[in-house]
Length: 242
Image 1: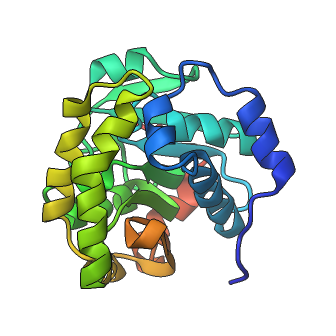
Image 2 (image 1 turned 180 degrees about the vertical axis):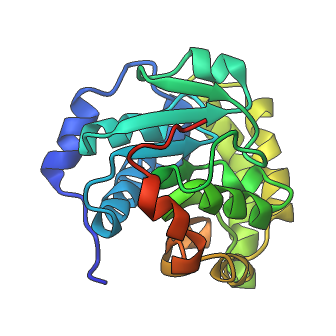
C-alpha cells in the first residue's frame, strides 16, 4: 500500500486539544514523536477499514491512543485495561472495561478494529495477546509498541539509552527515574523485530510492519483472515459487545 502520512493539519488538531496533564514523560523520552506515531497507526487502520463504527483500545492505560482516535475518526471507542486507576484517569469519556489483554471479555468479531499502543511489549506471551485481539476483531488489528532491532549494534545502543538515559529524561518532567527503569528490563526479554514479525504473520494477514527510532518502536497492521471472521460479518451490527 501507499505510505500513510499524517498531515500537519491533523497533528495540529490533536496537539491543540491535548490536555496539559498528558503524559509528558512519554513525550520526552520519545523526543515528542509518540503522538505522531499513534496518529500514523490510526491513519493506517483507517486505510484498511474506512468507516469503523466500533474500536477497541486494548491495554489503553489513560487512553492516549483513544484520545488520538477521537480526533481522527468519528467512532465508538471502548477502552480495556488491567489497572483500574488508569481507566479512572482516562483522557476521554467512553466505555471502560477492567480486564486483562490475555482474556478480553467480548464476543468474537465484535469490533471493526482492535488497537493497542505501547503495551504489547509487556506481555510474556505476545502471540497469545495478538490472537485474543484478533478474535474480537471483525476486520483489522493494529499495534504500536516497543521493538528490538535485528542489528546487534543498534540493539545495544538502544539498551544503553533505555538503561542510563531515558529514566533521567523522564525525571526532567517530574517522573520518578525508578518508574522508568523497568522498561529496560522489558526490552531485554522481548523478541527482535524479525522474530515478532514471524510470530504475528502466523496469526493474521500482515499488511504493514514498520520500524521507527532505530528499530526500538514498531507499527504493525493486520487483517483478519476470511475464515476467522465469517460469523461476525453477518451479525456485527446487531451483536452486543459483551
